[in-house]
Length: 323
Image (tube, rainbow, N blue to C red; front, side):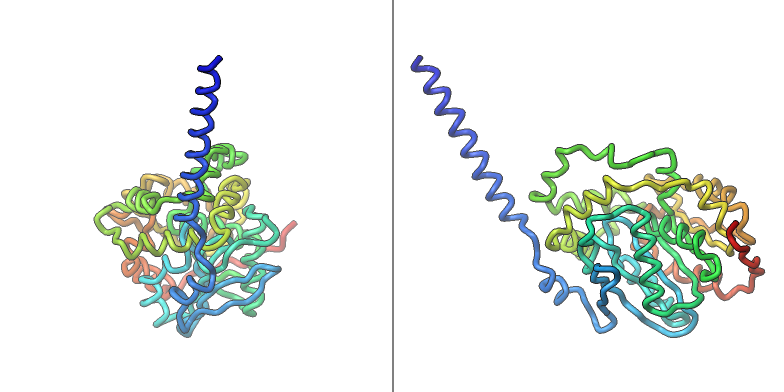
């Protein structure tokens, strides 16, 4: 029976070693305090206020007709930096970090559903007392912008959709079924290489991804309690009845799409056009060589096209009252 005793010692040693290794790794990948990140990434345009229990970080820049911009999943309002440099010369640009992203941090309610996100967006624009404005979003942000526009046609002047993520998820009841339980390890151990991989796989030209951008994404993920929030959003996401939502959009819409987008193929731009059957006007602009993270990869070009489109007179169909 001596061999059993030695096997037990060996197994115990392995378990102890594994626990020590896990604790050491978790210490290395420990959370970054919110105040440290705010000192690094907030700027004079940054503002914070409470929206239904969530401390929202936003920026309010420029003057002119208001334009609200919403970032993609895993990203932050910093994604729009290059585009805003031009847009703020002609518009009042407002952008915010969604709950569980950037400097906003987690939602105390623990609800990261699309419905909750749209509701927080609605409360955000209400708090800023915006009566009528244009709204745009990229990837998940585009889905949120579309849902808001469908629900509040009387508030939205025009809608801008930059590679929205709605179509790839429209057949899924719950995207969270694709996130295995094993992914919870990312709450404790999150290598910087993951941020590099996600960015390079979403750029049309991976060589454009630099260390500054990788550090920016990674730092925001490592904000205290942020990683758990990211996983919770993935597990709760559903694009809902996107066919019904697109049919409810009744404002002029601009669709922007990178032609080298592996996450949402450019062919979906025309498909989305057909689904926006009640929008009075739909314009499509595509970008050769640009991937899914087009706001980061081609910000100045996107800003130029948005400004030109917003400056063009258009016929706005009067929003009808809901049945």
